[in-house]
Length: 306
Image (cartoon, rainbow, N blue to C red; front, top):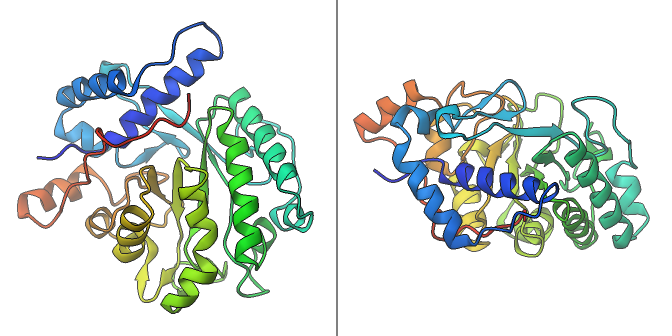
């Protein structure tokens, strides 16, 4: 059976080394050394432990495996500030930041958000939000980078570079067509292929190809008939294969509707808990042959956080 949640393990190791480097002279491990360590750890994980890693825990954490010294990974909401775990500096909303047309400022804001994240022990900042403003009544337009795909792309790349320069993974969101807060679990964004490629995808694509963002959060809504957590064409064919994304594909909070369909579509992690992606649902699917386990990324993952 192919390995499960290898990416989570690798990011755990990378994050551990990155955080250790901030307080010691410990040298950065090579990719080969990390791969070897991960291979060793994976062989010691039980199937239940592997499946448990596919679901979050305690609201904003990737669960730990204490017996193998794998710590929990901590997440915090953005994008205007590091919202969780105490007070934080609030920065300009996404649309206000974009109105400056200042990509240097975007990187500076990202860097300061990364510093705030590090101060709180946060590994994943759930930001930036880059959805194109499709409908003026969308309640989250203020978080996003406007309606121009080129400008949104430039702001996103610099923002992410700033965050990740501090050893924190950015999480670009909400993929894709997240254009309504009203009835957001059921709305269906119907978008033709040309509009997807030329308008709605460029900011996400640039985040992957240029900024090498560590994580993508998929959205609540359906796009062209499929919930985004189950949209294999967009999550796997486009993001993984076309763009070469090798990071974590996580759900928005409670935006997973079918664990087997989500894992088959390419989602790696269900947040905030494994309500659907759990050992009960997935072990049964494995036994029935209806689940294709996630890819093995040990040989291809690139370190971003050291």
